[in-house]
Image (tube, rainbow, N blue to C red; front, side, top):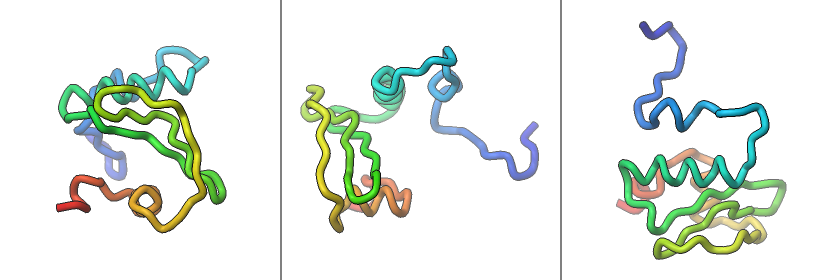
Length: 95
């Protein structure tokens, strides 16, 4: 039974959100997120980015099914920054 105020997770399987050990490797976690999302969405062109100060860090970026090297760039007023700021979903923004 769901308790009041407790978030409801309906989009991810429980194993994708529970760590398997106390020592997590960021690259492994991000690849697991990619694999799990690929179970119910197309992820051939996909990235996970974080913002630190005035830099955007692309920690996992996949283009055409190929993993690209990690990269960073100065933050600007782009779609990535908008998604980070608002939590919006990119597919819904473009529609």
